[in-house]
Amino acid sequence: MNGVASLSAAHRVAVFGGTHGNELSGIALVGLWLRDGAEIRRRGLEVRPFMANPRAVQERARYIDTDLNRAFTPENLSFQGEDLPYEVKRAQEINQIFGPMGSPDAYDVIFDLHNTTSNMGCTLILESSNDHFNLQMVHYIKHAVAPVTCSVLLNDHPRLHYSTTRSVAKHPIGLEVGPQPQGVLRSNIFESMRLILKHALDFIEHFNGGVEFLPCTVEVYRVVERVDYPRDSNGNISAMVHPDLQDCDWEPLNPGDPMFQMFDGRTVQYKGDCTVYPTFINEAAYYEKQQAFVMTKKETLNANGIKVTKS
Amino acid sequence: MNGVASLSAAHRVAVFGGTHGNELSGIALVGLWLRDGAEIRRRGLEVRPFMANPRAVQERARYIDTDLNRAFTPENLSFQGEDLPYEVKRAQEINQIFGPMGSPDAYDVIFDLHNTTSNMGCTLILESSNDHFNLQMVHYIKHAVAPVTCSVLLNDHPRLHYSTTRSVAKHPIGLEVGPQPQGVLRSNIFESMRLILKHALDFIEHFNGGVEFLPCTVEVYRVVERVDYPRDSNGNISAMVHPDLQDCDWEPLNPGDPMFQMFDGRTVQYKGDCTVYPTFINEAAYYEKQQAFVMTKKETLNANGIKVTKS
Image 1 (cartoon, rainbow over the protein chains, first blue to last red):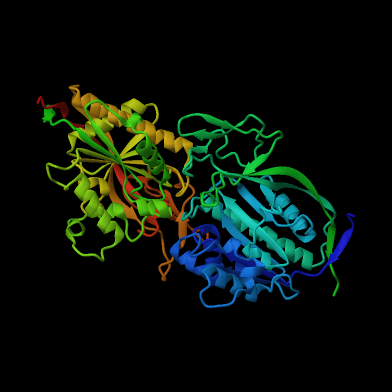
Image 2 (image 1 turned 90 degrees about the vertical axis):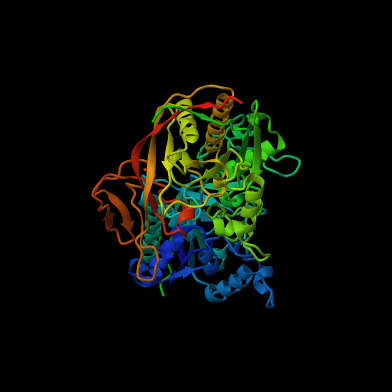
C-alpha cells in the first residue's frame, strides 16, 4: 500500500486571502504579494495571489450575504440569474478562474489563508485522508517549522464537512493561524503564516524538481462532533466556555472535565466516554453557527511516497 | 482645596451594555440583569440595566450607521427629522430617558460597559479631572480589586475627547475590559467586569448611606496623543504594531523604543523626547479611526473628600 506513487507536477498554485474579510493576516499578505510577488515566486511554478472576497475585505466583515467558505456547493455553482447573493456569484467566478471544480483544468493547489480567535496556533486543514500529495506537504511543513507545532485538522466528516473556497483545486489546503481577533493584524500571527506558506511553496518546488518523498506517517485531528453552547428556553446562550477549557485547543478533554461555566456559576462537565481533543474553542465566527468548539480525535495517517511523473 | 465636599446622593444609576454590539461582556451582563436584577440591587438606589444599541447587538456589529459612542454631540441631540442615522435617533432616545444631558433631571451615574481587543486589563475611563465623586469611586474600586490592577484612563483632551453615550449622566464612567476579541465572550473578562461593577455599586451605596470618603490621590493616565499606523502613498497600512509593543498597554515607551514593524521587516522607533504610556494598542475598532494606539502620560490627581448632603 505504501509504495511510491507517481503524480503529475503541480504547476498552478493559488494563494487566497480574504475569503473572510475580517481575517487580516491573509489579506495583508495577499495585498503585499499582489504589489510585489518576488517572495512567492518559485522555479517552474505559477503562484497566483488572489483576494477571494474583496467586498467583505472592504467592509472588514466575514461576508456580505452568506459565508463564501460554505458556498461552493454544486447547486450554488450551477445557479443562474441576476439576483444571486454576492458570495454565490463570487463562488461562480472563482470556480471559473481556478476550476472548474473536479476537472483536469482546475488549479493544482489552493492555499486559503484564515485566522481564528481560538488559541489554535498554526493549523493546516485537510479535506481528505487520501490526498497523498497534501499529506506529504503537511508532513514536510510540520518538520520544517519544528520545534514550533503545526497541527493538522482533518475534516472529511460526512455531515460537518463544508464546501470551501479552496475545494475548487485538486489539492485544497487551509492555513488557519490564531489566536487573533477579527479586524486585528498581529505581527506574530502574520509572520507565522508567512513562514508556513514559504515552506509549502518550497515543498512544491522540490516535488516538481524531482525530489522523491518517502512513505511517512502524519498525526491528524479528525473532526468528529460539533458542540453548541448551553442555551435557555429562548435560545440565548446561558454559559461560557469554562476557564479550564478556554485557550486549551488540541489538549485532551477527558470524561468529567469542565466544558462550560453557566452565568449562575455552575459547571457543565464533559459527559462522553472517551478522550477527545477540542479545537476552534470559542471562535467568534462560530457563535452564529451554534458551535462553541469542535471535538476531534487523534489519528495517525499513512502517506504513500510520492514522486513527480517524468514528462 | 482638599476639604470634604458635600454632594447630593446618587439615587439613579444606569448600567449600559451594548453601546457597541460586538462587545459581548456588557451585553451578556446587562441581558442577565434585565432578566433578574437581584445582583445589582442596592439599598436606596435605582439601578437600571439598559441595552444601549439593540440593533447593533442583534447584528453583532459595533454599530449600524455611525458609532453611538461618538454620537452625543449637541448637534446630534437637537437634530429633527425622520431620516436620521439609527444611532443619532437612538442617542436622542437615550438622552430623553437618562438626561437631558447637563440638566438636574439627568441620571446621577451611567456605567458604560465596553470590551477591547487590547491587553488593557481592567480600565476605568473618566472624562473629567474635576469630578470628585468619580475620583473617589475609582479610588475605592482600585483598592477593592487589589492586587489586581485597575487602571484609570482620563480623556479630557480638547481634540481627542469624544461625545460618549455615558456623557448624558452627571457622573459618566466607562468600564473597559480586555483583551477580548469582538464577538467573543470570555469567562475571565466577564467575571472581571462583574466584580468591578459590584464594587462600584457598593461605593455608591456606602456614599448614599453616609460614609465619608477622605481626601486621596488617584494615579491616572491622561490621553495626550493618537498615533496612526504607517501608511503607503495609497493610504494602505504598511506596518504592524511591533512585537515589543504589542500587548504592552500601560508600560513605558521610551525614546528610541520600537513602535511598528514594517511589512518589509524594518522597525519604526518612537522619536518623542519623553516617556509615554501607550494604551488601546492594536484595538480592532480603531483601524477605521486611523489609530494604532493612544499615548498617555502618567499623572496623580488629588480628590477632595466627599460626603453626602444631609437631606
